[in-house]
Length: 209
Image (cartoon, rainbow, N blue to C red; front, side):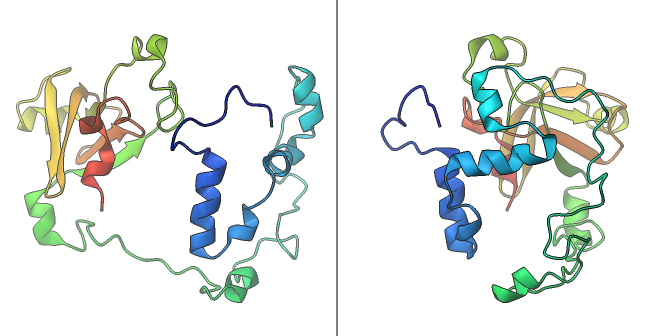
């Protein structure tokens, strides 16, 4: 892989970090491969090769791409699998079992009385998780964490559009600008994933277990 510079000081590449996590979780062999191989695996369904991309921009085939349109899946049988033998071989449960969220309002009703709003995260088109938040021209477009909430919830709390607010629970609090919108349902508030690189008081991770 071509790179502009080597990682500075204690910084590591995303590939290194993911590989180390996978090793500790027991399936490192799926990640501990040359980066070129991983990129080729991602590109394979598109029909575009890494070598083509290295030469310059590539136009993807004009026909509409339908995921799994050929009904072939990346499993040992080539079909949809509900009983996963490769997980069983690694000592994990072969059939996924639904686990209710421990803090869901229908599970912990006392907590729901104290904190009636549920928090979800959403993506921002200006960034990839926490990447690119140091780019000045991007922060000029979107410079801080924002929280979306429904007009009904905003009115009940005396919050107006673009007010500075705190989103909080027993774990901590996040600073954000309020975006009052009907695009989110009542009872739900939404923070953007990735903020906190520039201002650690704006990361939604403060509020999560």
